[in-house]
Image 1 (cartoon, rainbow, N blue to C red):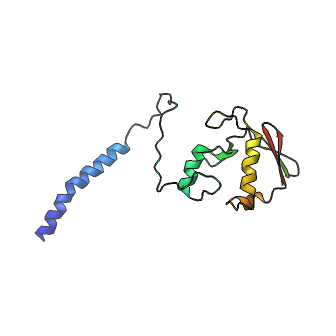
Image 2 (spheres, rainbow, N blue to C red; image 1 turned 60 degrees about the horizontal axis):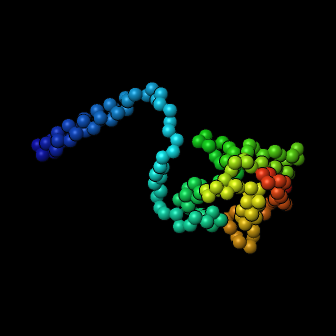
Image 3 (tube, one colour; image 1 turned 30 degrees about the horizontal axis):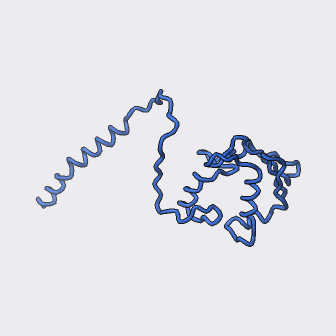
Length: 161
């Protein structure tokens, strides 16, 4: 009986100290910072496994999608509140009254990582690869519902369902 009581007493001091440390940390300053956030720097993002491909047409795991999301822009993305927001697109699409024609304008200053402008031709080429049933990508079925994807001008793409 004395042995278990002795062990119990040994744990009290560290447990009380840990509890106090947690409470003190939780009571930290909650006032918003008046500092202006700095742009730039290095982001280190831990993933639970390695990406095995950087090819967005065959990616299938969360680590691959995370890495690819930093490399390739999307027409639209999700914000922190899970709202759809323009990424490469210059605003939300214009949709015909019957809902069958969607027109997307691209940001005029959109560039690839090497500085080459991103154009409607790039969007068409990418989405034709994604939708090609012979390539059998994970996205082929999604694009099979489209009648056409057309270039309207250098910065505009039209989708017809």
